[in-house]
Amino acid sequence: MLSVSHYFSIRSKLKAVAIPAITATSFFIVGVLIAQYMYRSQLKEQETSGTVVCSAKMTYLFENMKADVLLEFMSHLAGNSGVINLSGNFYQDNKITGTLRRKIPFTWEGTLNYVQLRSGEIKKSIIDDSTPDDLLEKVLPNFYVYSNKRIDYTISREGADAWLFLVGRSPKFICEEIPNT
Image 1 (tube, one colour):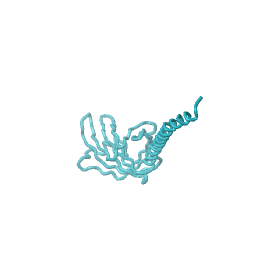
Image 2 (cartoon, rainbow, N blue to C red):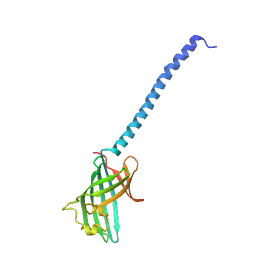
Image 3 (tube, rainbow, N blue to C red):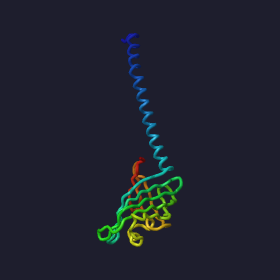
Image 4 (cartoon, rainbow, N blue to C red):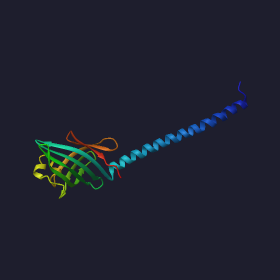
C-alpha cells in the first residue's frame, strides 16, 4: 500500500514534469495557429488589395514567324489598372529580324478569377522596338500590339507565388511572382 508521504512525493514529481510539458505544448500549438492565421491573412490581403507583380516567358508562333517575349505584369488590384512590360525578339525563318520593347498600360474588369483587360496607349521604345505592328499582329494577340484592344483571361492561383493564365480552357502561361527587392 502507498503511504501518504509517498503519494505526495509522486504527485509533486508528476506536477514538476507535467505542467511544463503541457505549457510548452500549449505555446507550440498557439504559435502554429498564429503562424497559420498570419500566412492565410497575408495571402488574402495580397489577393484583395495592393499590387501583384509577376513575369512570364512566352513563345508565340505563326507560319515562319516567332516572337520570344518576356511579359512583366504589374497590376494594381484596388484601382483595376496596371502595366505590362513586354520585351523580346522577333524571328522570321529562324533569324532575328526585330526586337520588342513596349509598355502596355491596361485597365481590367472582372473578378480575381476572370478578367477582361483593355490596352491603353502603347509606349514603344524608340531604340529597342523595331518590329512592325503589321507583322507582330500575325503572331501576338492584338492586345499586345494595338491600343484599346481587349483580351480575356481566366486566372487561377498556383501555390503562393504564381498564377496560371488561361484563354477559354487553354492554358497560355504561368506568371511567377517577382519578389520585392
